[in-house]
Structures are given as C-alpha cells and as structure tokens.
Amino acid sequence: MLIKVTGILEFAPENKTRKHDSQASWKRVAMIIVPDELTTYYSWFVKKRYNLELNKPLRGTHLTIINDSDREAPMFEDARKLYDGEEVSFYIDPSTRTNGEHWWLRAYCPEGEAIREVCGLRRDPYFPLHMTIGYANEKVLPHSQYIHECIQFYESPSPRLPFEEHEIYEFKL
Image 1 (tube, rainbow, N blue to C red):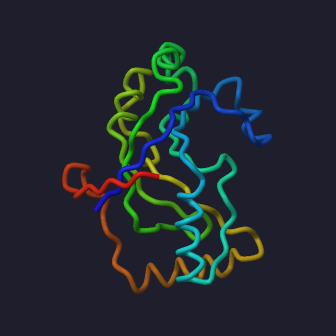
Image 2 (image 1 turned 60 degrees about the horizontal axis):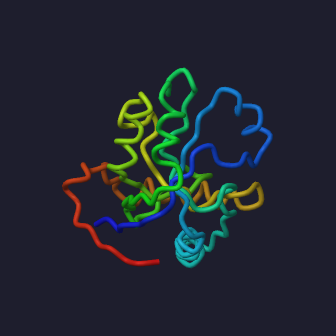
Image 3 (image 1 turned 180 degrees about the horizontal axis):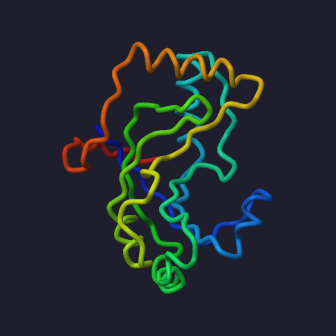
C-alpha cells in the first residue's frame, strides 16, 4: 500500500548546516517540500510503539529527488527554470524503516524520476527515494539501535517492490 502525497518542488533550497554550505559550490539539490505534520505524525507512531523521541529533519518534511554533483547534473539549471515551484506528487510506504540512527519511509516518485532524467541523471538515485521522519540524537541513540536490532531479528524485511505493484491511497493534507 502506498499513500499519495503532494508538495512543492524546490530547487537549490536554503543551506541549513555547515556541511550544506561547504558543498554548495558543487552539489545540486532539489526536493519536494510538504507540510511538517507528515513527519510529526509518523514520529508520533515511533514514540508510541518504541518509546523513542526523534529529532525532526533539519530541512523539515521533504523528499529529496536530486542530491548530486553539478558535473553529473549538467541540465540542472534548465530543469530549475521549468520545474521550480511546481506541485509534484509522490507516494510513501507507511511502514517505518531505520538503520538505528535515522528513521524514514520508502518513497516512489515517477515525476521526480523524470525530472532527474531532464537534469541528465539516472532515474533511480544511488540511495533509493525516501522521506526522513527523524533521527535519534546521542541521548537516545543506544535505544534506537536496540530497536533496530530487534526489528532485524523479529521482523522479516520486505523488499522494495516496483511502484506498479502497489495499491495507492490518496489523502488530502
């Protein structure tokens, strides 16, 4: 099951950290911005199920569709002129995922994949599309890692299915 979400595509969003600033000269970024209530909602589920309080994503609720070097995205500025500020839909799998530190939802975005191609990139990024719902700070990191180990031991991992194999539900935020 996938849930349809719609947001606004933003090319070259504001840098929020020193890392972003240090990479700004060569890295190209485009993300779909959605209301923060979405990550707040899923963070609440993590808190209720695992008693784990997550920090919010630094750039708010978003789906990053481009996070590549400028030499790999030669048509970035042309795509920016075409798509910046446009409404774009994507789809999230409501099952939370974690690596022990970061928590996310799998995401699918056929429109975003097409925009990546316009920029001269491969349709599928190196790291699969996902929407980060939060991260564990150093105070709760051991608990988050323990939860990750339990999930790996007790729950069988589900493979990432092709987009076409999912049933889609649409909700308006």
